[in-house]
Image: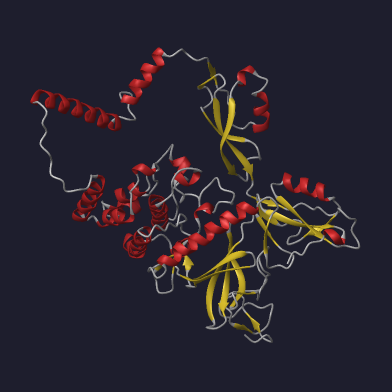
Amino acid sequence: MDENKTYCMNCFSEMDASGEACAHCGWKDEGQMRNALPFGTRIGGKYLIGQATRINGAGITYAALEENTLEKVEVREFFPNTLAFRALNGVSVKPAAGTELKYEDYLSEFERYTQKLIRVSGTKRMMSVLDTFSENNTQYTVFTYVESVSLRSYVEKHGPLSWADCERYFLPVIQSLSAIHGQNVEHLGISPETLRITPDDKMILTNFEMQSVRRAGTDLIEDIYPGCWAIEQYSKTKICDEVTDVYGLCASMVFALTGTVPMEAPKRKKDPRLLISKNVLKQLPEHVIPAIANGLQVDADRRTSSFSRFAAELAAEPTVMEQIVETETLRSLPTGGRRPRKHGLPLPLWLLFSFVFSLVVILAVASVWFKDSAFSIQSIMQSIQDINAPQAEMLEVPNLVGQDYTEIEARTKTDAAYNFRLDIYEEIFSDTIPTGQITTQIPLAGQTVEVGGTVRVAVSRGAKNRTLPDISGMTADQAKQALEREGFVMVSVNTLSEDVDIGSVIGYANNEAGDALAYGSVVAVRVSAEESAVSDDA
């Protein structure tokens, strides 16, 4: 690239003049995203960084140019904004004090996931990994660039798809997902944003991401698309695998057909209905409706177990379904070709053993079959235990929803009516519910709990995006308190200054007051310090 010419930082075509929109792609220079690498930064010895196109809890994605081939690529940089910040040189990534081990753990996960993607690169209808390398105390992954628009944008522009178009777009992606899951590679973020339509009218799957940013309860801000996350992704402990991706794919299919995604999985647990208009239902083949419904079962154990099975259900191929069921049955049976041995037990004793064995099997099957029934083995045993056990003192649970968590926790130590423990099982972001307010409770108000027992609650974190306060003139301690009140993590960067007293704030290192950042983001603040305390932040 000629340094004397102006280039578009999105498509890298030559531009007539800076400040004007690119004639090829329409891009206009409105500045780089906060905390992103500066335009023109060279990494890996051959990649020129352009416009940052996407940022989430795990990192930043850029449009980039491979200098040797002059091909546009997509570069993914590991940059967890809850654990790290950009050094003063604008390039290196530094973990915040006390987060070094966590940073290394997540960096290792990022690298391992990249290696898994390399293993399945070349699979049709998904972005391929071209390169990966370590630099600037972080890791970069380079993907092929494919021009495309999101399924969301496509449907908003052209309207919902017919079943014929939906089938034509989705089936090749379903086949590719079956193939990559066979190699133990998951996506966990399938949505109308990550499914994209190319100029040659094909659907591709993009934005592969390591698991820690695609589930709740980690140190990273989750990358959630409401309505497409399966229920297990809201848990810290439940397994997320192929059935999770089946849910996201089916939710995206519903969007393609109707223009809306299903309700969020936690809400569907109470009301699992799929709201699809009669006009849409009329155009769907009869076998498609239960196939999609099976893929959107809230309970993972009841959901369609694989993409191969889902494809067979969509195709209404009974022969293929029989083969799948037979295969899954055979997998559960013991292997080996040993011939049965003759038993030397007397006939009456053998009959007795057979009767006992049959009885155990029947009870086991009944226990599973009626596990949700009042007549299940578990229920009967529990009832027996409840009858014989000493009766615990019970307490009626008051209504906690809408109350401040801190105030309720204080009352549990002083008020007999609140003689229970509080356990936060979920923290949610909300633009309308104040920080610290209880949003749901288990048991519900009016139900009972043992005295001294546990009431589980969900609590609002407040808005997901917060505004950086003005910290000019503050001491470092005052600035830290002000930032923590807004949900940020402050990192002090010692800096020489002739104008600001030692120990006072010079300003933000990479941001400005008023910038909107995600809750929990690490924010670097330049603090005036003596020369001996100033470290090299390059």
